[in-house]
Length: 471
Image 1 (cartoon, rainbow, N blue to C red):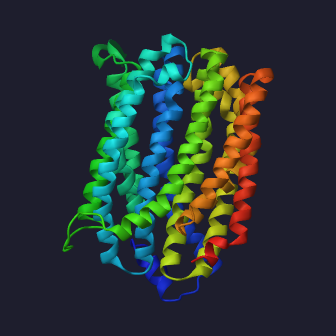
Image 2 (cartoon, rainbow, N blue to C red; image 1 turned 60 degrees about the horizontal axis):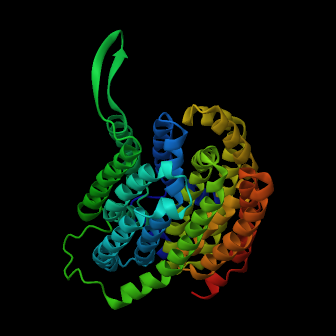
Image 3 (spheres, one colour; image 1 turned 90 degrees about the horizontal axis):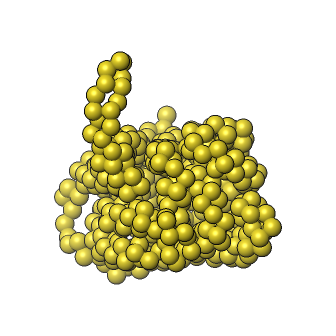
Protein backbone atom coordinates (compact mmCIF):
# COMPACT_ATOMS: atom_id res chain seq x y z
CA UNK A 1 0.00 0.00 0.00
CA UNK A 2 1.13 3.55 -0.72
CA UNK A 3 1.15 5.95 2.18
CA UNK A 4 -0.13 9.38 1.26
CA UNK A 5 1.37 11.72 3.83
CA UNK A 6 2.89 14.89 2.46
CA UNK A 7 6.30 13.44 1.66
CA UNK A 8 5.88 9.66 1.87
CA UNK A 9 5.78 9.30 -1.93
CA UNK A 10 9.06 11.21 -2.16
CA UNK A 11 10.57 8.88 0.45
CA UNK A 12 9.48 5.84 -1.57
CA UNK A 13 10.97 7.40 -4.69
CA UNK A 14 14.33 7.79 -2.94
CA UNK A 15 14.24 4.17 -1.82
CA UNK A 16 14.42 3.11 -5.48
CA UNK A 17 11.04 1.42 -5.45
CA UNK A 18 9.58 0.46 -8.81
CA UNK A 19 5.89 1.22 -9.17
CA UNK A 20 3.46 -0.85 -11.21
CA UNK A 21 1.38 0.91 -13.83
CA UNK A 22 -1.69 0.54 -11.62
CA UNK A 23 0.13 2.14 -8.68
CA UNK A 24 1.24 5.06 -10.85
CA UNK A 25 -2.35 5.59 -11.99
CA UNK A 26 -3.40 5.57 -8.34
CA UNK A 27 -0.81 8.18 -7.40
CA UNK A 28 -1.79 10.44 -10.29
CA UNK A 29 -5.47 10.09 -9.41
CA UNK A 30 -4.94 10.80 -5.71
CA UNK A 31 -2.85 13.89 -6.35
CA UNK A 32 -4.87 15.13 -9.32
CA UNK A 33 -8.36 14.80 -7.85
CA UNK A 34 -7.90 17.43 -5.10
CA UNK A 35 -6.15 19.68 -7.61
CA UNK A 36 -9.03 19.35 -10.07
CA UNK A 37 -11.56 20.08 -7.32
CA UNK A 38 -9.57 23.16 -6.27
CA UNK A 39 -9.50 24.47 -9.84
CA UNK A 40 -13.20 23.77 -10.32
CA UNK A 41 -13.93 25.69 -7.11
CA UNK A 42 -12.09 28.69 -8.51
CA UNK A 43 -14.02 28.45 -11.75
CA UNK A 44 -17.28 28.25 -9.84
CA UNK A 45 -16.35 31.59 -8.28
CA UNK A 46 -16.04 33.01 -11.79
CA UNK A 47 -19.39 31.48 -12.76
CA UNK A 48 -20.99 32.95 -9.64
CA UNK A 49 -19.54 36.39 -10.31
CA UNK A 50 -20.56 36.23 -13.97
CA UNK A 51 -24.11 35.08 -13.21
CA UNK A 52 -24.67 37.66 -10.47
CA UNK A 53 -23.21 40.50 -12.51
CA UNK A 54 -25.03 39.20 -15.59
CA UNK A 55 -28.28 39.95 -13.81
CA UNK A 56 -27.27 43.63 -13.89
CA UNK A 57 -27.18 43.67 -17.69
CA UNK A 58 -24.79 43.28 -20.64
CA UNK A 59 -22.95 46.54 -19.91
CA UNK A 60 -21.99 45.37 -16.40
CA UNK A 61 -20.71 42.06 -17.80
CA UNK A 62 -18.81 43.85 -20.55
CA UNK A 63 -17.04 46.11 -18.04
CA UNK A 64 -15.63 43.03 -16.28
CA UNK A 65 -14.78 41.32 -19.55
CA UNK A 66 -12.93 44.46 -20.63
CA UNK A 67 -10.34 44.20 -17.84
CA UNK A 68 -10.36 40.41 -17.41
CA UNK A 69 -7.24 39.94 -19.52
CA UNK A 70 -5.42 42.53 -17.40
CA UNK A 71 -6.30 40.70 -14.16
CA UNK A 72 -4.91 37.55 -15.78
CA UNK A 73 -1.71 39.43 -16.61
CA UNK A 74 -1.06 40.43 -13.02
CA UNK A 75 -2.27 37.09 -11.73
CA UNK A 76 0.25 35.43 -14.03
CA UNK A 77 3.07 37.45 -12.49
CA UNK A 78 2.01 36.31 -9.02
CA UNK A 79 1.77 32.71 -10.20
CA UNK A 80 5.25 32.85 -11.74
CA UNK A 81 6.70 34.25 -8.52
CA UNK A 82 5.09 31.47 -6.47
CA UNK A 83 6.29 28.79 -8.89
CA UNK A 84 9.88 30.06 -8.79
CA UNK A 85 10.06 29.18 -5.09
CA UNK A 86 7.62 26.27 -4.84
CA UNK A 87 9.35 24.16 -7.51
CA UNK A 88 12.48 24.39 -5.35
CA UNK A 89 10.45 23.03 -2.45
CA UNK A 90 9.32 20.10 -4.64
CA UNK A 91 12.96 19.30 -5.43
CA UNK A 92 14.00 19.60 -1.78
CA UNK A 93 11.11 17.41 -0.65
CA UNK A 94 11.99 14.79 -3.25
CA UNK A 95 15.58 14.80 -2.01
CA UNK A 96 14.44 14.46 1.63
CA UNK A 97 15.92 17.86 2.56
CA UNK A 98 13.02 19.03 4.73
CA UNK A 99 15.07 21.70 6.52
CA UNK A 100 15.95 23.22 3.16
CA UNK A 101 12.28 23.19 2.12
CA UNK A 102 11.33 25.07 5.30
CA UNK A 103 14.06 27.63 4.72
CA UNK A 104 13.01 28.24 1.12
CA UNK A 105 9.42 28.74 2.26
CA UNK A 106 10.43 31.37 4.81
CA UNK A 107 12.60 33.24 2.32
CA UNK A 108 9.87 33.12 -0.32
CA UNK A 109 7.43 34.91 1.97
CA UNK A 110 9.71 37.93 2.36
CA UNK A 111 10.66 38.17 -1.30
CA UNK A 112 7.18 37.63 -2.73
CA UNK A 113 5.49 40.09 -0.36
CA UNK A 114 7.86 42.88 -1.36
CA UNK A 115 7.28 42.15 -5.03
CA UNK A 116 3.50 41.91 -4.61
CA UNK A 117 3.26 45.40 -3.08
CA UNK A 118 5.10 46.80 -6.11
CA UNK A 119 2.84 44.87 -8.51
CA UNK A 120 -0.28 46.01 -6.65
CA UNK A 121 0.78 49.65 -6.78
CA UNK A 122 1.46 49.42 -10.52
CA UNK A 123 -1.93 47.78 -11.10
CA UNK A 124 -3.73 50.48 -9.11
CA UNK A 125 -2.14 53.26 -11.18
CA UNK A 126 -2.93 51.39 -14.39
CA UNK A 127 -6.59 50.98 -13.38
CA UNK A 128 -7.25 54.70 -13.82
CA UNK A 129 -6.32 54.63 -17.52
CA UNK A 130 -6.90 51.04 -18.66
CA UNK A 131 -10.49 51.22 -20.06
CA UNK A 132 -9.60 54.19 -22.26
CA UNK A 133 -6.44 52.52 -23.51
CA UNK A 134 -8.43 49.44 -24.47
CA UNK A 135 -10.69 51.53 -26.68
CA UNK A 136 -13.95 50.67 -24.90
CA UNK A 137 -17.08 52.79 -24.89
CA UNK A 138 -16.91 55.47 -22.19
CA UNK A 139 -20.06 54.06 -20.57
CA UNK A 140 -17.98 51.09 -19.36
CA UNK A 141 -15.08 53.05 -17.89
CA UNK A 142 -16.33 53.72 -14.36
CA UNK A 143 -17.27 50.12 -13.54
CA UNK A 144 -14.17 48.67 -15.20
CA UNK A 145 -11.88 51.06 -13.29
CA UNK A 146 -13.56 50.31 -9.95
CA UNK A 147 -13.36 46.55 -10.56
CA UNK A 148 -9.65 46.60 -11.44
CA UNK A 149 -8.75 49.06 -8.65
CA UNK A 150 -10.18 46.72 -6.01
CA UNK A 151 -8.30 43.82 -7.59
CA UNK A 152 -5.08 45.84 -7.30
CA UNK A 153 -5.59 46.60 -3.60
CA UNK A 154 -5.76 42.89 -2.78
CA UNK A 155 -2.70 41.82 -4.80
CA UNK A 156 -0.53 41.11 -1.69
CA UNK A 157 -3.26 38.84 -0.26
CA UNK A 158 -3.50 37.06 -3.61
CA UNK A 159 0.28 36.62 -3.61
CA UNK A 160 0.25 34.94 -0.19
CA UNK A 161 -2.61 32.72 -1.28
CA UNK A 162 -0.83 31.65 -4.49
CA UNK A 163 2.44 31.07 -2.68
CA UNK A 164 1.11 29.03 0.24
CA UNK A 165 -1.17 26.89 -1.87
CA UNK A 166 1.62 26.20 -4.38
CA UNK A 167 4.00 25.38 -1.55
CA UNK A 168 1.56 22.92 -0.01
CA UNK A 169 0.94 21.27 -3.38
CA UNK A 170 4.64 20.95 -4.21
CA UNK A 171 5.31 19.45 -0.79
CA UNK A 172 2.79 16.74 -1.72
CA UNK A 173 -0.30 18.05 0.07
CA UNK A 174 -2.98 18.50 -2.58
CA UNK A 175 -5.94 17.97 -0.25
CA UNK A 176 -5.75 21.06 1.98
CA UNK A 177 -5.53 23.61 -0.88
CA UNK A 178 -8.57 21.92 -2.41
CA UNK A 179 -10.55 22.28 0.82
CA UNK A 180 -9.56 25.92 1.20
CA UNK A 181 -10.50 26.66 -2.42
CA UNK A 182 -13.94 25.13 -1.83
CA UNK A 183 -14.44 27.28 1.26
CA UNK A 184 -13.45 30.35 -0.75
CA UNK A 185 -16.13 29.47 -3.30
CA UNK A 186 -18.81 29.37 -0.60
CA UNK A 187 -17.62 32.64 0.89
CA UNK A 188 -17.64 34.25 -2.56
CA UNK A 189 -21.34 33.44 -2.90
CA UNK A 190 -22.11 34.97 0.49
CA UNK A 191 -20.02 38.11 0.01
CA UNK A 192 -21.36 38.71 -3.51
CA UNK A 193 -24.96 38.26 -2.35
CA UNK A 194 -24.62 41.14 0.08
CA UNK A 195 -22.14 43.33 -1.81
CA UNK A 196 -23.43 43.36 -5.40
CA UNK A 197 -27.14 43.95 -4.86
CA UNK A 198 -28.88 46.73 -2.89
CA UNK A 199 -31.16 46.18 0.09
CA UNK A 200 -34.29 44.46 -1.16
CA UNK A 201 -37.38 42.55 -0.15
CA UNK A 202 -37.07 38.77 -0.27
CA UNK A 203 -39.96 36.31 -0.15
CA UNK A 204 -39.15 32.85 1.21
CA UNK A 205 -41.67 30.23 2.33
CA UNK A 206 -44.43 32.83 2.07
CA UNK A 207 -42.52 35.13 4.41
CA UNK A 208 -41.34 38.54 3.19
CA UNK A 209 -38.41 40.29 4.82
CA UNK A 210 -35.84 42.96 4.03
CA UNK A 211 -32.47 41.60 2.90
CA UNK A 212 -29.56 44.01 3.51
CA UNK A 213 -27.20 44.81 0.66
CA UNK A 214 -24.43 47.27 -0.20
CA UNK A 215 -25.54 47.77 -3.81
CA UNK A 216 -21.97 48.06 -5.13
CA UNK A 217 -22.74 46.35 -8.44
CA UNK A 218 -19.66 45.43 -10.48
CA UNK A 219 -17.29 46.67 -7.76
CA UNK A 220 -19.08 44.43 -5.26
CA UNK A 221 -18.32 41.36 -7.39
CA UNK A 222 -14.58 42.00 -7.21
CA UNK A 223 -14.70 42.96 -3.54
CA UNK A 224 -16.55 39.75 -2.71
CA UNK A 225 -14.05 37.60 -4.59
CA UNK A 226 -11.09 39.44 -3.09
CA UNK A 227 -12.40 39.03 0.47
CA UNK A 228 -12.91 35.32 -0.16
CA UNK A 229 -9.33 35.03 -1.42
CA UNK A 230 -8.05 37.03 1.56
CA UNK A 231 -9.69 34.47 3.82
CA UNK A 232 -8.06 31.70 1.81
CA UNK A 233 -4.67 33.40 2.14
CA UNK A 234 -4.99 33.56 5.93
CA UNK A 235 -6.08 29.92 6.20
CA UNK A 236 -3.35 28.58 3.92
CA UNK A 237 -0.65 30.67 5.62
CA UNK A 238 -1.73 29.43 9.04
CA UNK A 239 -1.75 25.81 7.89
CA UNK A 240 1.65 26.07 6.21
CA UNK A 241 3.16 27.76 9.28
CA UNK A 242 1.83 25.46 11.97
CA UNK A 243 0.36 22.24 10.51
CA UNK A 244 2.27 21.22 7.38
CA UNK A 245 4.65 18.30 7.93
CA UNK A 246 7.10 19.74 5.42
CA UNK A 247 6.71 23.53 5.69
CA UNK A 248 5.92 24.32 9.33
CA UNK A 249 8.52 26.64 10.79
CA UNK A 250 8.74 24.96 14.17
CA UNK A 251 12.37 24.61 15.23
CA UNK A 252 13.69 26.43 12.16
CA UNK A 253 16.45 28.89 12.90
CA UNK A 254 17.66 31.67 10.68
CA UNK A 255 16.45 34.96 9.29
CA UNK A 256 13.84 35.85 6.72
CA UNK A 257 16.28 37.51 4.33
CA UNK A 258 16.26 35.71 0.96
CA UNK A 259 19.56 34.04 0.09
CA UNK A 260 21.19 34.81 -3.22
CA UNK A 261 21.18 31.17 -4.38
CA UNK A 262 17.47 30.73 -3.63
CA UNK A 263 16.50 33.99 -5.34
CA UNK A 264 18.70 33.16 -8.34
CA UNK A 265 17.01 29.79 -8.76
CA UNK A 266 13.57 31.38 -8.30
CA UNK A 267 14.37 33.90 -11.02
CA UNK A 268 15.69 31.13 -13.28
CA UNK A 269 12.39 29.25 -12.94
CA UNK A 270 9.97 32.13 -12.49
CA UNK A 271 11.29 34.76 -14.91
CA UNK A 272 10.55 32.74 -18.06
CA UNK A 273 7.11 31.97 -16.63
CA UNK A 274 6.54 35.65 -15.95
CA UNK A 275 7.64 36.44 -19.49
CA UNK A 276 5.30 33.74 -20.79
CA UNK A 277 2.36 34.95 -18.71
CA UNK A 278 3.03 38.54 -19.66
CA UNK A 279 3.13 37.63 -23.34
CA UNK A 280 -0.05 35.57 -23.07
CA UNK A 281 -1.98 38.16 -21.12
CA UNK A 282 -0.66 41.07 -23.15
CA UNK A 283 -1.94 39.16 -26.13
CA UNK A 284 -5.30 38.85 -24.39
CA UNK A 285 -5.27 42.60 -23.84
CA UNK A 286 -4.47 43.06 -27.53
CA UNK A 287 -7.28 40.69 -28.50
CA UNK A 288 -9.64 42.66 -26.22
CA UNK A 289 -8.66 45.79 -28.11
CA UNK A 290 -9.45 44.01 -31.37
CA UNK A 291 -12.82 42.84 -30.00
CA UNK A 292 -13.81 46.10 -28.23
CA UNK A 293 -14.84 47.97 -31.41
CA UNK A 294 -17.27 45.11 -32.19
CA UNK A 295 -19.57 46.46 -29.46
CA UNK A 296 -20.95 45.68 -26.02
CA UNK A 297 -22.68 42.46 -27.10
CA UNK A 298 -19.43 41.06 -28.54
CA UNK A 299 -17.41 42.03 -25.46
CA UNK A 300 -19.97 40.45 -23.12
CA UNK A 301 -20.29 37.29 -25.26
CA UNK A 302 -16.50 36.95 -25.40
CA UNK A 303 -16.24 37.34 -21.61
CA UNK A 304 -18.97 34.77 -20.94
CA UNK A 305 -17.51 32.34 -23.48
CA UNK A 306 -14.12 32.51 -21.75
CA UNK A 307 -15.81 31.90 -18.39
CA UNK A 308 -17.90 29.01 -19.74
CA UNK A 309 -14.92 27.33 -21.39
CA UNK A 310 -12.88 27.50 -18.21
CA UNK A 311 -14.83 24.65 -16.65
CA UNK A 312 -13.39 22.47 -19.43
CA UNK A 313 -9.74 23.36 -19.00
CA UNK A 314 -9.53 23.76 -15.23
CA UNK A 315 -9.30 19.97 -14.71
CA UNK A 316 -6.22 20.18 -16.92
CA UNK A 317 -4.67 22.78 -14.62
CA UNK A 318 -5.45 20.58 -11.60
CA UNK A 319 -3.62 17.67 -13.26
CA UNK A 320 -0.85 20.05 -14.29
CA UNK A 321 -0.28 20.97 -10.63
CA UNK A 322 -0.06 17.28 -9.75
CA UNK A 323 2.38 16.80 -12.63
CA UNK A 324 4.61 19.57 -11.32
CA UNK A 325 4.68 17.91 -7.89
CA UNK A 326 5.34 14.40 -9.20
CA UNK A 327 7.98 15.38 -11.75
CA UNK A 328 9.62 17.82 -9.32
CA UNK A 329 9.84 15.27 -6.53
CA UNK A 330 11.05 12.59 -8.97
CA UNK A 331 13.85 14.91 -10.09
CA UNK A 332 14.73 15.70 -6.46
CA UNK A 333 14.87 11.97 -5.72
CA UNK A 334 17.10 11.51 -8.82
CA UNK A 335 14.53 9.22 -10.46
CA UNK A 336 14.45 10.34 -14.08
CA UNK A 337 12.62 7.15 -15.01
CA UNK A 338 9.71 8.19 -12.80
CA UNK A 339 9.85 11.77 -14.07
CA UNK A 340 9.47 10.48 -17.64
CA UNK A 341 6.71 8.03 -16.74
CA UNK A 342 4.67 10.49 -14.66
CA UNK A 343 4.99 13.20 -17.33
CA UNK A 344 3.35 11.10 -20.04
CA UNK A 345 0.80 9.53 -17.71
CA UNK A 346 -0.42 12.91 -16.44
CA UNK A 347 -0.45 14.38 -19.95
CA UNK A 348 -2.62 11.60 -21.38
CA UNK A 349 -4.88 11.79 -18.33
CA UNK A 350 -5.36 15.50 -18.92
CA UNK A 351 -6.08 15.00 -22.63
CA UNK A 352 -8.68 12.33 -21.86
CA UNK A 353 -10.51 14.34 -19.22
CA UNK A 354 -10.52 17.62 -21.14
CA UNK A 355 -11.72 15.87 -24.30
CA UNK A 356 -14.68 14.53 -22.34
CA UNK A 357 -15.44 17.90 -20.72
CA UNK A 358 -15.19 19.55 -24.13
CA UNK A 359 -17.76 17.15 -25.59
CA UNK A 360 -20.11 17.73 -22.65
CA UNK A 361 -19.74 21.51 -22.93
CA UNK A 362 -20.46 21.42 -26.66
CA UNK A 363 -23.96 20.18 -25.96
CA UNK A 364 -24.47 21.90 -22.59
CA UNK A 365 -23.26 25.40 -23.46
CA UNK A 366 -26.72 26.82 -24.37
CA UNK A 367 -27.87 26.00 -20.84
CA UNK A 368 -24.64 27.39 -19.36
CA UNK A 369 -25.09 30.73 -21.14
CA UNK A 370 -28.73 30.86 -20.09
CA UNK A 371 -27.49 30.58 -16.50
CA UNK A 372 -24.80 33.24 -16.96
CA UNK A 373 -26.86 35.95 -18.66
CA UNK A 374 -30.51 36.68 -19.49
CA UNK A 375 -29.51 38.55 -22.68
CA UNK A 376 -30.58 36.35 -25.62
CA UNK A 377 -28.22 37.98 -28.14
CA UNK A 378 -25.24 37.48 -25.84
CA UNK A 379 -26.29 33.86 -25.32
CA UNK A 380 -26.52 33.18 -29.05
CA UNK A 381 -23.15 34.71 -29.94
CA UNK A 382 -21.43 33.12 -26.92
CA UNK A 383 -22.61 29.61 -27.88
CA UNK A 384 -21.50 30.15 -31.47
CA UNK A 385 -17.91 31.13 -30.65
CA UNK A 386 -17.39 28.68 -27.80
CA UNK A 387 -18.31 25.69 -29.95
CA UNK A 388 -15.57 26.70 -32.39
CA UNK A 389 -12.86 26.64 -29.73
CA UNK A 390 -14.01 23.39 -28.07
CA UNK A 391 -12.70 21.48 -31.10
CA UNK A 392 -9.16 22.31 -29.94
CA UNK A 393 -9.68 21.08 -26.37
CA UNK A 394 -7.60 17.84 -26.61
CA UNK A 395 -4.45 19.60 -27.82
CA UNK A 396 -5.08 22.48 -25.43
CA UNK A 397 -5.00 19.88 -22.66
CA UNK A 398 -1.67 18.55 -23.91
CA UNK A 399 -0.10 22.02 -23.68
CA UNK A 400 -1.48 22.66 -20.19
CA UNK A 401 -0.30 19.43 -18.57
CA UNK A 402 2.99 19.27 -20.45
CA UNK A 403 3.74 22.77 -19.15
CA UNK A 404 3.25 21.48 -15.58
CA UNK A 405 5.59 18.54 -16.25
CA UNK A 406 8.30 20.76 -17.67
CA UNK A 407 7.87 23.25 -14.81
CA UNK A 408 8.47 20.46 -12.29
CA UNK A 409 11.83 19.83 -13.97
CA UNK A 410 12.64 23.55 -13.90
CA UNK A 411 12.31 23.81 -17.69
CA UNK A 412 10.43 27.08 -18.16
CA UNK A 413 12.42 29.10 -20.72
CA UNK A 414 11.66 27.11 -23.88
CA UNK A 415 7.96 26.62 -23.00
CA UNK A 416 7.73 30.37 -22.46
CA UNK A 417 9.21 31.05 -25.88
CA UNK A 418 6.89 28.51 -27.50
CA UNK A 419 3.88 30.25 -25.98
CA UNK A 420 5.19 33.65 -27.04
CA UNK A 421 5.66 32.63 -30.67
CA UNK A 422 2.39 30.72 -30.79
CA UNK A 423 0.02 33.32 -29.39
CA UNK A 424 1.56 36.41 -30.97
CA UNK A 425 2.60 34.86 -34.24
CA UNK A 426 -0.56 32.84 -34.86
CA UNK A 427 -3.54 33.81 -32.69
CA UNK A 428 -3.31 37.59 -32.85
CA UNK A 429 -2.11 37.80 -36.44
CA UNK A 430 -4.82 35.45 -37.67
CA UNK A 431 -7.44 36.97 -35.36
CA UNK A 432 -6.73 40.51 -36.57
CA UNK A 433 -7.60 39.58 -40.14
CA UNK A 434 -10.44 37.13 -39.46
CA UNK A 435 -12.41 39.49 -37.20
CA UNK A 436 -12.71 41.94 -40.09
CA UNK A 437 -14.83 39.46 -42.05
CA UNK A 438 -16.16 37.09 -39.37
CA UNK A 439 -16.58 39.35 -36.35
CA UNK A 440 -16.08 37.74 -32.92
CA UNK A 441 -16.15 34.25 -34.46
CA UNK A 442 -12.95 35.11 -36.33
CA UNK A 443 -11.02 35.61 -33.09
CA UNK A 444 -12.22 32.25 -31.76
CA UNK A 445 -11.28 30.46 -34.99
CA UNK A 446 -7.80 31.94 -34.61
CA UNK A 447 -7.72 30.80 -30.99
CA UNK A 448 -8.66 27.21 -31.91
CA UNK A 449 -5.95 27.06 -34.60
CA UNK A 450 -3.32 28.48 -32.23
CA UNK A 451 -4.19 26.16 -29.33
CA UNK A 452 -3.92 23.13 -31.59
CA UNK A 453 -0.50 24.14 -32.87
CA UNK A 454 0.65 24.97 -29.34
CA UNK A 455 -0.37 21.51 -28.10
CA UNK A 456 1.64 19.83 -30.86
CA UNK A 457 4.71 21.93 -30.03
CA UNK A 458 4.55 20.99 -26.36
CA UNK A 459 4.15 17.29 -27.11
CA UNK A 460 7.28 17.51 -29.28
CA UNK A 461 9.15 19.24 -26.43
CA UNK A 462 8.07 16.54 -24.00
CA UNK A 463 9.02 13.75 -26.40
CA UNK A 464 12.52 15.07 -27.14
CA UNK A 465 13.33 14.91 -23.39
CA UNK A 466 15.93 17.64 -23.48
CA UNK A 467 14.43 18.75 -20.14
CA UNK A 468 15.66 15.44 -18.70
CA UNK A 469 19.08 15.44 -20.36
CA UNK A 470 19.95 18.84 -18.93
CA UNK A 471 19.40 17.67 -15.34
